[in-house]
Length: 278
Image 1 (spheres, rainbow, N blue to C red):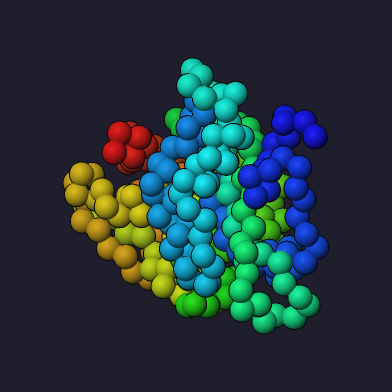
Image 2: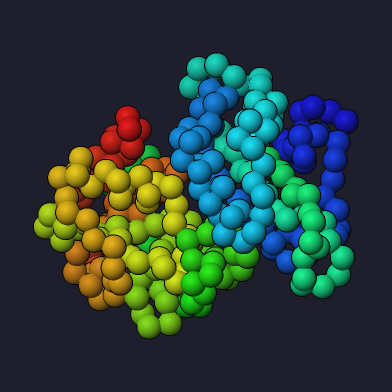
C-alpha cells in the first residue's frame, strides 16, 4: 500500500479500523487537532498533556509521547524542516476493540489514529475584520463526568453545525439549557469588560481547548484580570469585546452576533501574538 496515504492506524499505513473498535461503535475515545508547521507539531507539550488528561478522564491508557511523535514524524516526514508549510494533524485514541455491549473489556489495547490534512483556508478578513456567529438552537446537555474532555461523542456539535449554510457565518454559539454561553462548535469564548477577561465555566459541559488554557495562563501578560464563571448570552452581548479561540487559528474577534455589532479592536491580535511567542 502506498505511503502517500494521509493517515496511520497504530503506526501503519496498511491497517484498518475494526468494526469491533469501541471508538467506531460508541464514540469511546478522545481526539486532538493540532497545527503542523514545517513537519513539526505546534504546542506539542500542551496537546499531549491534554490528550493524557482526557484519556485518563474516561479510563484509557494514553500512548506514550514518543510513540505518537514517531507517528507524526512518519506521516509528515516529507514536510519535515520545509519552509512555510502549515498542515493539520488529528490524533484519535480509542479504547480499542471489544465485544458487543457497553461494558468495556477488563483489558484493552488502545487504537491510535493520526490523520494528515490541509490547513483550513481561513479568510484574511477573519483576521483583519473579525467574524460573525450564529446562535445555535440546539442546547448542550450537562454531564460533569465528561466536562472539558474532547471525546468522540460530538453529535451535538454536528447537529449545531447543520443549522446554517451561509458562508459569512464563521461558527455557532452554543448555550446550555438555561441560556448560558458554553462555547462554539469548534472554539472557546472569551469576553472583556474593561480590564476583566471572562470565559465561561466548563465544569459541567463543553470542551476546554489548549488555547483557552494558554490564555488563562497569560491574562497577566495581557494586562487583564481573569474570571471563569457562568456567562449569559445577554451579558456577552453587552461586553466591550468578545473573541473566539482554538489551536488552529489562534483567536478571532467576534464582530457580530444577530443584530449586535462590535467595532474592530485589538485583543484577538494581541492573543495571537502572545500565544505564538509563548
